[in-house]
Figure 1: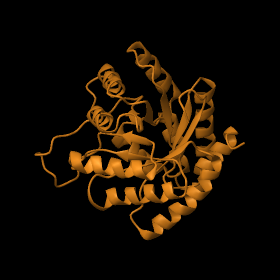
Figure 2: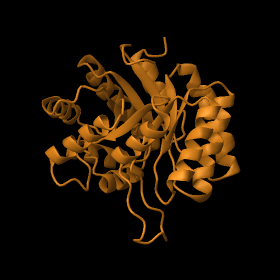
Figure 3: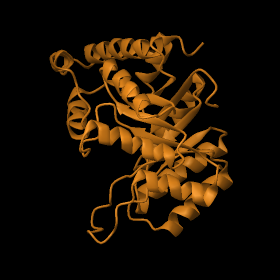
Length: 281
């Protein structure tokens, strides 16, 4: 989907570690593809089997004619390894990437230099020109390691200046955080599209743990409400669907250019939210 079009829908998977998980993901993507997303993204672990799992899923989805965007980071890999992987993706028909700093694999030690996302974007452009549309990450509530709000906005600008096309945000539950972030980005001269990342709610304990680790704020009223449902999965799921539907409605009504769902390799509740929004018509 080109940047000139009004709305973009995308879904994210992570690479399963078991044969059972990989078979389940086939069923999940067969259902979610019926919702006509513009692309699926697949997360990435640097080095070893996790990286190979990502590559395997990308190859399978390309063979099924599904538009897919691999996540990519250097981690412990060298430039030759990354360049070979990019060439392989290109030969399979991949046209979009999600370029990230990523995490250094455990056991690598301090000898490896961290390669930041802007450097990865510049590397891709240097080696492959405009062969790929490049997505990068954005943080409306600011990256946990950022020195300041403004520093984080300017770092995002650096990723665009290196050649990124657009950004996908960390998930959030306060739409004001997203719109304020867009205003601050605009003040710094950022005109690229920034797509909101959406996290459906299915398990409060997991959500709370992950949110605390990545800096995504769960508003106090929402946390208390979810806590009251944590022993009633049916009520929690229903509340979560209503809550995230309302969040998406607010985002779209106020000009968000699209939605990117972190599906957690599940059909529901993403499908129900899409249906509530009327995006499956």
